[in-house]
Amino acid sequence: MSEIKVVSFKIGGEEYALDIMKIDSIIEVKDILNVPQAPYFVKGIMDFRGTVIPVLSGKKKFVSPNEEDESNKAIVVNIKDKKMAILVDEVKEVLTFSQNVLEEPPEEITNESNKYISAIANVKGRMIMVLDIDRLLSKKEEEKISNLSAQSETK
Image (cartoon, rainbow, N blue to C red; front, side, top):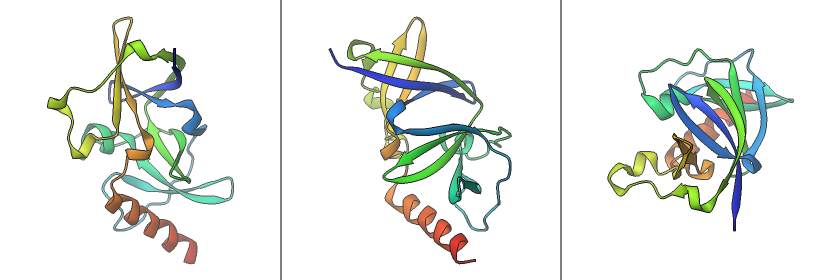
């Protein structure tokens, strides 16, 4: 039987999980530099081990574009060979899910803007959205974020 190891975390009262193999680090964010004309869900950029990486607002991306992120906890992930930090309210725990607890998200709730939800885990009364981090950003969003990183490196 196939299993997946994930790290669960909360954003705006909802619980999410990411494949542990896609996570680089869990960190406390100290300084975020705001970037003009960044996409609505980009909080800014930060230094991570000598490299400038984008910091995404988990609340703006997953909850609502109008939500403000006050968290200083972030999960640094590898999205298509690029590192990005996602601000989260709370990192919960490492879990192992067997395939029999993972369900496809219902068609009625899936659309272009949340195609990154790969499964719903229903475990011990908890509903956890399992994310496919490689599908988190649209092509257009990826380009905008790449341009931000390139601009910050030339300054």
